[in-house]
Image 1 (cartoon, rainbow, N blue to C red):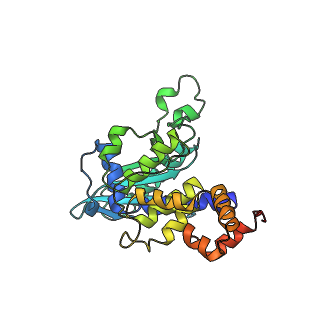
Image 2 (image 1 turned 30 degrees about the horizontal axis):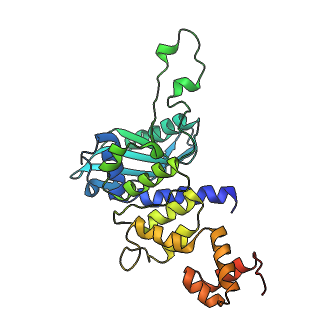
Image 3 (image 1 turned 120 degrees about the vertical axis):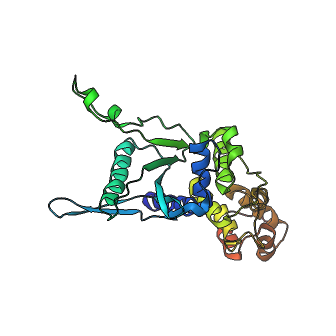
Length: 294
C-alpha cells in the first residue's frame, strides 16, 4: 500500500469512530471534565467540517477539519468542539489549529444572529513510539524580536496523547474509545500485545477498521468483515477478537501451520476452514512456501 493511501485510510478510519456522538462526548467528558458527564450524546449536533470565508478582495478560502460538533443546550449552541487526528507529530499544528478555530469564529460572525460561542479544539495523537514533544504554542515556533514578546498573542493547542492516557482516565471512559485507548496504551508498553478487554463494543466495525490501519495488521479487517457492522451475531468483545487473531495467526505462523497441515495430507479446503481463511487466501500463502515431500 502506498504511504499516501495508507495515511489517508488512517485519517478516514479515525474520523468514523470519533464522529459517533457517544464516542465524541466520552472523549470530551474524560479529557476536559475529569470523567463528569457534562456533555451528553443527544446534546451534540454535527457541524460542517468546511469553513468558508471571503477576503476583502472576494477570494473564497476554505478550512477543512476532521470532526466538528455543536454542543447545545436545548436549541441554543453553547460551544463548538473540534477534533483533529494525528498519527505523527506536526510542528505546525498550533498554526493549523489557530486557522481552524479562526475560521469557525469568522463563520459565526457571518451568521445573522451573531451569537458567538467558544471554539474548543483537541488533537488526538495516536503515536506509540514517542510522546508529542513539538511545541504546543505558537510563541515557541517563532523568533520574536526583543521587547515584543508581551505584544505577541500566544495560542496553545490541547494534545491528547492516547497511548499515554493514565489508568485512572482509562477507567472513566464509557464508550468504545475506552477500548481503543486501552489498546494503544498496552501496545505502547508491549508491541506484541494481544487485546483482552471484556467490554462489549457498540461500534464494532469502526473500532476494527481503526485498529487495522493503525497497526497495519489486516487480520482486524478480516474479522471486521465478519461482523456485518453490528455486534449482533458477530464479535462482541476484544477477547473474542483475540481468539480470532490466535486462530488466524501471524503471516509467518500461518505459513508454518499451512506447511505442517499440507505435509500431513490435509486439503486446502480443510486448511481454509481450520484457519478461518478463504480458499484464495490459502492458495496465495501456499505460493510462498515449500512443502517437504515424503
